[in-house]
Picture (cartoon, rainbow, N blue to C red):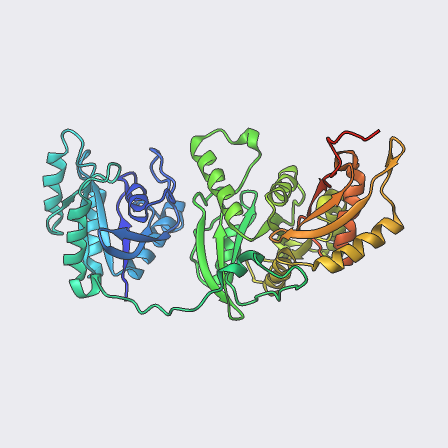
Length: 473
C-alpha cells in the first residue's frame, strides 16, 4: 500500500517548486508572486526509489474563514487530514516568521508524522534560518534546494524514517491484463469493420469557460464535496486540477481550468501561465465542456473558446450554467437554441444542456451528452459504406467543372477517428472549391449521425502513371 504526502507551509517558500521536482514535471504553476497555488493538486512522486502520492497545497495564512485566504486554508487543512505525512517547508534564506510557528503548532495538534524541510538552503546566509528551524520543535530540519535538486537523498531518508520502512517500500499488487496494442485508437482495424464503442474506458473531460462561469462549482457538485476552491470572486482557479470519480460505473477524469478572458485583457504573467495551463488541459482531454453563464450567454469570448476547442479537434458540449437564476425558462431556452445554430455554424448539432452547478439540476443529462458526444468522436465508418455514400452524393450534387473539366471523386476511406478524418482520392484536388467540402461534411453529419464533433476531409490527387512519359508518335 502506497502513502500520501502533503506539502505545507506559508506562501512563497517553494512548495510548488518542490512538488514539480518530485513529480518530475512542471505541473504546478510557479511564480515569484506569493499565493500562486490555491487548490490542492495531487501528483505521482518518485524520489530515489520511493513512490508515493504528493499533494501541493496553498500557502497557509491566518485569515477569516469566509475570506478567500480562509477558504484556501480550509483546502490545505483537508489535504493534511487526507495525507499520511506532511512536509513542512520553511524558507532558510529569509528565516522564520510568526506564521511558521503557528503552523508548526497546528501540525503538532494533528498528531501525524511531519518532516521539517528547510528550502533555499543553497543561498548565501541561509545557515541562520536553518538553525532557527530547530526552535519549531519538529525535529531536525532537512536542508534542500527544490529549485536545484540539492538534498533530495537526505529528504528521502527523512521520509522513510518518519513513515517507516515497511510502509515506505510496500509493494502494491498490480493486476496484469493482456492488451491488444494494435487496437489503440482504431489502429490496425479491418477497414470493413466498424468497432464497437468501449463504454468502460476511462474518459478525460476538461471544463473550460470565462471567469466566474461556475466551472469549479460544477465539478464540486459532481463529486459531492467541496474539493475545489469556489467563491464569488472571479478568477479563483489558476492551476488546471484533475479529479477522478465514477459515473454509472465509468471512471471520469475531469480537469478544472482557469477562466479564459479575451487575449487583449491578459497582461499579467501569472494569468498567461494559467491560460496556457488551461490550453494544455484542452489538448489532453477527449471531451471539452464549455460552460456558459446562462444569464449573459454568447459573449464574444464564449464563441472564441468554442472555436478554439473545435480547431483543436476535441469533442465539445455546451453547458448553460446558473439555470436556477432564469425565470422564463422556455423562452430563454428557445432563444439559446436559435443563437447556438446561428452563431456556431461550424458546430452544427452541438449538444447544449441547461444546468445548475449550485443545485445539481441537469447534471445527469450533461453527463449523458458528454458520453454520447465521445461516442461520435470515436466513430469509425467502413470503407464500403463510405464509397456507396460518396457515389450517391455525387449523383445528387456533382462536383463542379473547373476550366471546362469535371472533377471526379474516385475513392473515400476513413483514415482516423478522434476526431473523424477522411481521405478522398480525386482528380485536381487543388481546384475543388471549399463550398463542396462543406457540402460533403454536412452530408456526413446528417447521413451517419455525427453531430457536434469536428470532421476533417483531406483530398489527394490520384497518381497519373503516364505523367512525365513522352508521347509516341
